[in-house]
Image 1 (cartoon, rainbow, N blue to C red):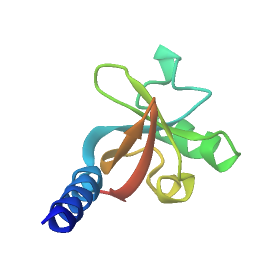
Image 2: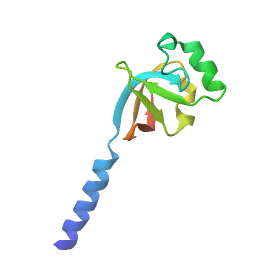
Image 3: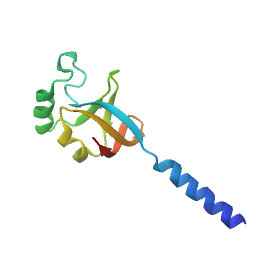
Length: 98
């Protein structure tokens, strides 16, 4: 019985950590994300990210999230997206992006 209980606890812990959170916002570059004049400037975001400025997610309320796996977000530069992922500190690790 103890073994069964231990296995259940382990499975539940892994299941709970597997749930992704949802984040919505605009994919912008780090350099321009804090400049009000650059807000939602799609062409600037694409250009700066292409030149190497890391992509970030800027939410409607102005919160800026770093992105751990840049390869999944770069194709969405300059777009409004919905990200499924996990948050650690202010960094999102993306599972999927639409």
